[in-house]
Length: 195
Image (cartoon, rainbow, N blue to C red; front, side, top):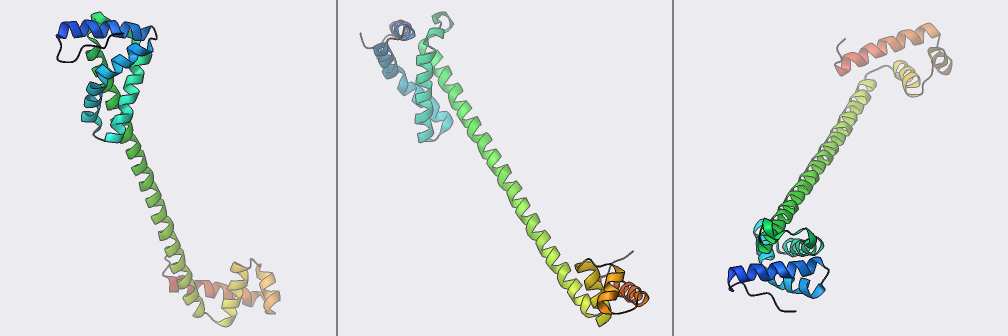
């Protein structure tokens, strides 16, 4: 197996040599692929690095391009263009795909981070609001009479009915209803709730 001609060789002779090498690669000739690799990998790397601009990713993409050339060697058609043109096209497409993929991934991560940040802010804001409302309710409850506070606590925090509140506090039912109604009005006014 002869080595492909160097880049400074006669362009027509080089094209013919690479086309012949590509035919052998299409037939599964590993030595031909090794020669093709040596001839094209510097050009492929150069194209990819100009698009990708990250050395580690460039090396990875360049390897993928060379593997594509091995796998797709049977698809190469000399009448469509030279081997170097075909390889350059494959390299450029792969590099652009990598950049687009990286950008899409970065966009997804940023969107997710933004959603998480918004969610976290909303949760914190909600907790603060609940805490402030709870403090306001406690402050307003201190402004009620003892019977009003006890009746409302039993009814709203322990879920007792009017009758159960009256029995628990040993107070007539009509008195409990009046105290609770007056207590709720005072709470509403204290908390600034408009109807």
